[in-house]
Image 1 (tube, rainbow, N blue to C red):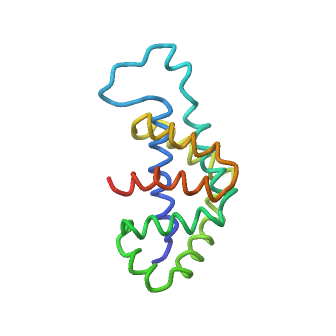
Image 2 (tube, rainbow, N blue to C red):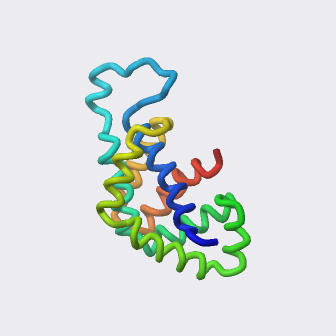
Length: 154
């Protein structure tokens, strides 16, 4: 199960891309948004950076919750069994990998790359923004994890 967080992070990247695209209000089939709506839409890169920075701030709550969410959906395949066998080991491995992925340059690069990727309903970015308003990590993670889990189910 080498590089478990890469798999976890890829799921995170998918969510962040979705949040970023939703922040843009972009979909491939939709008509362009009026200028006033575009002006009010959050910057997708800034939204991504804010989510990832907050995840970093809340690492002790975020990584176990992300591992558990991935296990609930068996994404990547096999994580459910690995978590059942030794949850602490999976979390420890994820934390080790997160140590690099949570650094500012990694967050910036990922968010810049993903800002224009994918599309998601504006409700997802609104939900993430509401979660960011949570002061404590426990409530923030509990709030944002369902947004992430939606991406694991697709």
